[in-house]
Image 1 (spheres, one colour):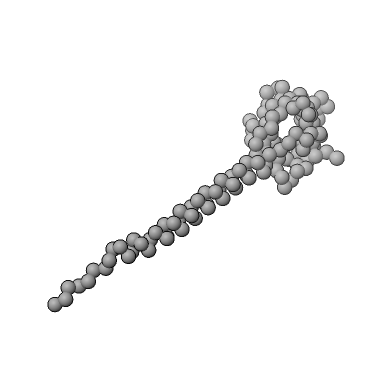
Image 2: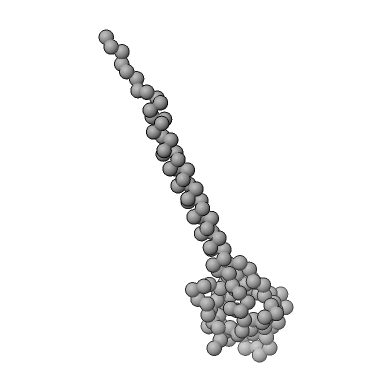
Length: 135
């Protein structure tokens, strides 16, 4: 009686080597692509001083903000004609932090696809006000 033949183990492991190489290549490609996309997202939303300088008006309220080159601003809230002084700081991702002298803080979010408007979020109330660049 003939003994049953057993499959050779060497043949199956040899066929896995190209697959492992391909998997490593794909993982490296995905990692590099993800890293490049993350870097793009970090710099794509950045905002420059020159793009925010000037007067901005709220769409649905009688509010007004004037951004100045020296990182100061004046913000008129409500019907007041005297602007509240404050300062702003640019951050990455299109975020601008606004701090008024009276202690109120806001966050402005600038986006590339709407360069002539931004959202201002009241840090205390989380209320959002849309501002547009004044003509």
